[in-house]
Length: 164
Image 1 (cartoon, helix red, strand yellow):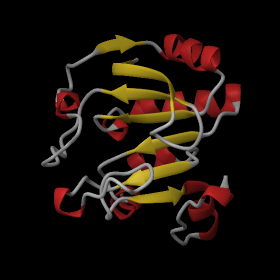
Image 2 (cartoon, helix red, strand yellow):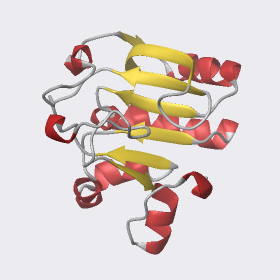
Image 3 (cartoon, helix red, strand yellow):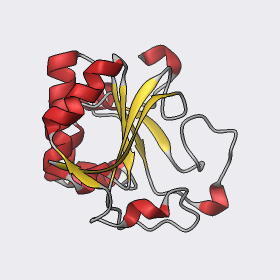
Image 4 (cartoon, helix red, strand yellow):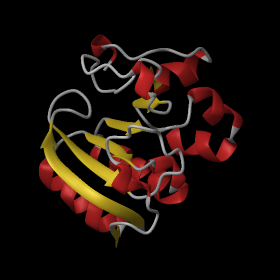
């Protein structure tokens, strides 16, 4: 089960191409200037089963972005959903989090959640670094991390459109 605020089908703002974006409830980063402060409530939205989410994802036949809130704060369900998307559908999966890659690397539970991701958009939103011209992120500190290359090389590798 995951606590879901909203599902946006056919969006192009949360990663390349048309995607299915799933916004999960709960965030304790509480970034000033957050574009979605309603997502902070861990009791917001409604509980959805992985089977229900997989039906929506399969119906849309599109890559997936997990956002929120912070999907890493529902680690078991998020990890299980990513695994099912990758193994059952083979879709590209992106995830937005307020944690930095360095914090995730130090926490085995969080690292386990992100292992199958394609791209992780890391770091809190920092209003002083806000830039609306950035693709797929809100502030300059946030990075688009190519998770698979980073794990394979043990060197943080940023995503570029040619890497996926």
